[in-house]
Length: 153
Image (tube, rainbow, N blue to C red):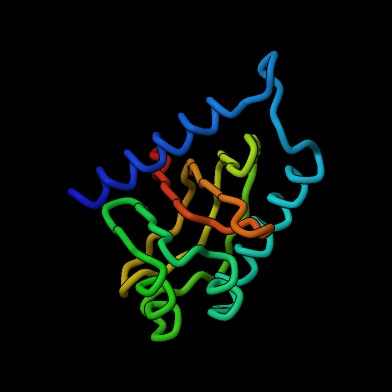
């Protein structure tokens, strides 16, 4: 529970800093090229997760990446280990209603994801709303935080 609170606070702090970096007049910094680049990274991430491509995930995620999905908290090493062992297996993953906002070196992505997932033997498939935070580190966008909340019908 404590880790989930930490991830939530980091996400809120990153978003607050990002809003503070917003260009005069409330316009987002970074332009369409950054937005389209982040959307490509999101598609690449989904493809890598479904393929179990740990090399791609290692490249896309920052070393201090954290994720809170439902009641499961994972760090980058835990994601990589679970993908390698098969404890985490995605059969399908796609995003809808994706919104990317870029503020300087920070990007906040929100949307809805639909996935078919087996996590440590449990079927956790379904739809969820997500918030992801990317940071441009040395000229390369990397995912630093992920949070998703399941959509209940």
